[in-house]
Image 1 (cartoon, rainbow, N blue to C red):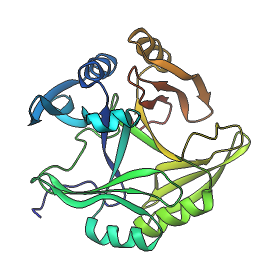
Image 2: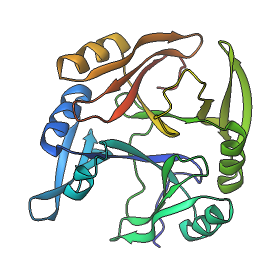
Image 3: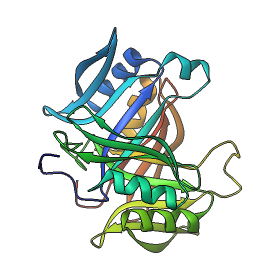
Length: 264
């Protein structure tokens, strides 16, 4: 592997959308977040689209294979975490009870990846950068800002990720529940909440990607005008910001957040 300025081990570094309608999905997100794009051919009339801000890659999207569409798989976002050695992580993840879905394998010269399902059922990917580090404008407006695990077993999830990635954890009481912060070098990099009986039983454990926006209400209204469905209306979180959960027209779920924390 060549030496580049990779994101630090344990940091969420890339986001990837698998959608059942690549053309309409691209229109939705580029309109919502004012992204540009670079369509890179990966087959006959098939593209891996780099979504860009100020000329830098910040996320990607591609058309879901027809066999997955026929199986009823929903459009979805996948979060990637930077690691120093993806092969070592693959072995450790299996020892800790995860299921390896794909990899480890090289993605041409860009880097090496692994997709896994954690012991509670949430899907996540690991990335060892080579020529591509991942997001070029991480944490800026209109880019991925926060990642949050919804799980049905907080202890199992916390133990797994801390053991696999060296994360530290901190429990923070928050509006009637205990919210877990995951930290790297003392800095919060992700969160976790435990799903209660109020959550529909058919919603599996999952990682939610939050995109930073300048105005939550404006983003929600724009998403709705573009055909998105508002799952959770704009809601204030004291000392954190204002967020909303949105389902895009193809069925992929994501969140937007207007942060009041001074780092965007």
